[in-house]
Image 1 (cartoon, one colour):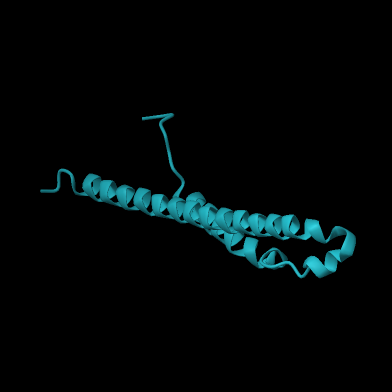
Image 2: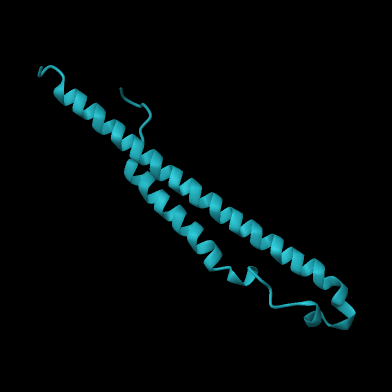
Length: 103
């Protein structure tokens, strides 16, 4: 059947590895967001009232980065699993075609 849908299991495996690596690197490259060294005293007397908003914002940003990382890991893993399923299906069909008529 010409022009039908095809899936490149190699491309899926490569994409999976790259996405998972990106997801693993994301928190590692943004550790400064895990906890900010700036606190209320660091803001000084005049700006101390704004420290809570800043630290809460940094915390929220870290949670977003962590959540995005987890989502990317799951996405990359799913692509890898999909590629394996395609490969297994292709192998099963290849075996069935090879064995057809040899009974």
